[in-house]
Each structure stands twice: as structure tokens, then as C-alpha cells.
Image (cartoon, rainbow, N blue to C red; front, top):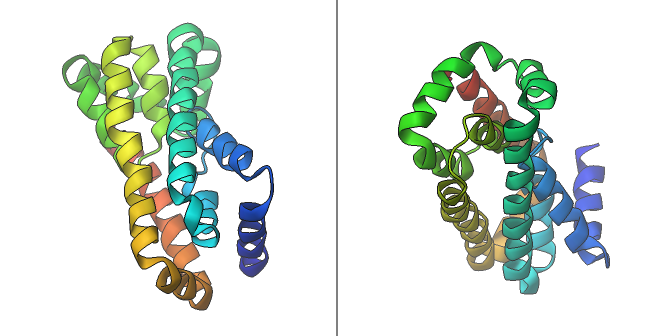
Length: 193
């Protein structure tokens, strides 16, 4: 099954709608989807090395656009949509402490959440719910998301063929490590906030 998923992502990289696919996942990751764009972005970058920078740019723009949707959910629809999403992920109990931290550290929380495997949608929704000023929010998103995607792209650019060979030989290990990072982000969110 892992091999089929990997092959699908590699084939998607060559598809004419590849940018739409990675952009959509990046957009939804920043607002409602619990799957990071790296799952599709990395195989696409490995398959299309000559398009790494364009893929990173699409992920950055789409992620920031999705962050505004997450912010809007928190700001306008927190009680109707934001609170149930936080309840669904098990974060509502810790939201009051998170809101207080936002009053003091907002932009740094956005930057930290955007650079790490921490679920970015939690940060974007909380930013809206706590009414973090939009300029600070935007700066935090730019300062975190662009370096994250472009640094991954740079790593894959310089290690290209070696990375592809490593992933293909150790697909189960790479997948396990990716899911552990994602799960670690959710665990960190639950216990830190």
C-alpha cells in the first residue's frame, strides 16, 4: 500500500494538475486538514527536481492563503466551527491557557507553529479566536512557512538523487518517521496547550 501511495505521488508530480494538488493540500493543512503538505510535496520535489522552487512557492502561497481561512474560522466562526474542530482534535480543554499565551507571544507562536510539525491549523484558528492582529499574523506566516518549504526544497535540490534512492529503498521507515513527526506534533499540541 505504501508503494502504491508513493507511486501515485510520483506520478502526480508529472500530472498537469500537480500544482493544484499540492496547493490544495497546503491550503487545507493550514485550516482544516490534519495532513501536512509534505506528504505530497516531497515526492513531487523528488520526481521533478527542476520544479522544486515552483513547488515550494505554490506550497508557501497556498499555505498562507489557507492560514487566512483558519484565522477567519477562529475569528468569525469560533463557536460554530473553530470550537468543534479544537474539540475534535482534543485541544479545547487547554484553549484558555493557549489564549493567554497568545496575548503575550502571538507572533512567535505563529512562527514556531509554522516551522515545526505542530498542527498549523491549530495555530491559525487560535490566532483568529484570540484576535491576534492581522499584520503580526501575516508576518508570522511568511517568516515560518516560506523558510520551511524552501529549506525542504533546498535539501531535496542538493541531495536529489540520493534522497529518491533512500526513500525508495526505505519507504516504510520514511513513512513511519513522517507519521511519528505528525503524531508528535499533535501530542505536543495536546500537552503544551
